[in-house]
Image 1 (cartoon, chains in turn brown, cyan):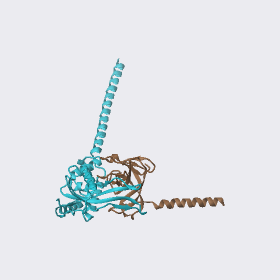
Image 2 (cartoon, one colour):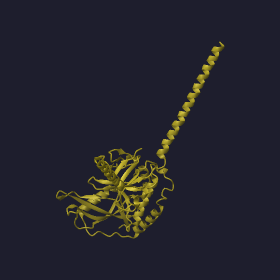
Image 3 (cartoon, one colour):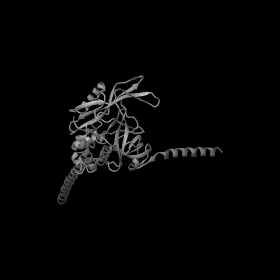
Image 4 (cartoon, one colour):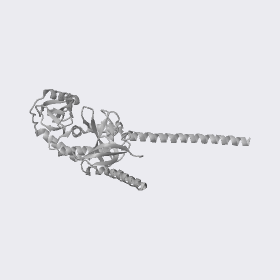
Length: 148
Length: 230
């Protein structure tokens, strides 16, 4: 009797875990802007900087950068514009504040696990699709590294 | 004697062989070093990483300006429109490559929107007259002017005005003030840009602990629309 009870609990827990997992859809970069507004999606790619990475924020210290998330390491393939929160103290799921004059080498991304990675490392990001502008912008909430 | 002579010759042959081998190894080493050296130089001066996506990003920005009724152009895209070589050099710097590594047709991806927006902007800069703002807010406007002058050395400020006579209070869903602001426009000519333009400015004060904080000018120099110079 106790065995059945344990198995049932285990099954329910598994179902809960899997149902939570299916809510986060992994999509191709080229399909991000086809998603409905405010949908949470997971995509993989490499961070690159545009010619001007706008600081979207205020003088009180909080803000975001506008970056490009590209499909391939050589910068080719599809891309999506993404906003990432900025930090001056290596906060998780944030990008370190950029110097006034920057290159790709200055990109320091702090992942959810606390690792700091460069623009050369492929990452999996979770974010919400914002369709206020055309094409859309992915507002990034979580950044993970991918196994090599 | 005969055996000793043969041994001597054999040793000499071995030595010559060793010397040849050493020479060959040195040659191989030199070749490897040269190949490595050229590949490093090639990488440094090679293809620019993410050039195509950057041009795609620029094309989206140009399309966005075209879709806007006022044809408001971001500072970045103004640079591309009027000083493409400077824009190109700055992008090359971000990408860690040489501007000479750009292919000759590097502007192909933006060409249609670039030409269309440039034509629209040039026409409006010769015909559209800036509408003066109805109010003056000397304190906030002085702050805005100082910020603009610092951002664009050599800038000419022709006029400035406010849309509001008094502060606008912004409240959250609970009815508690979060900040207050005034908004207006400034008429300027930025060095390197052939036309005058109007840009919106916002001065904000955050509400903290029962009183408002210091004035902060936000988003200075973000974007503008082109008008006739006074």
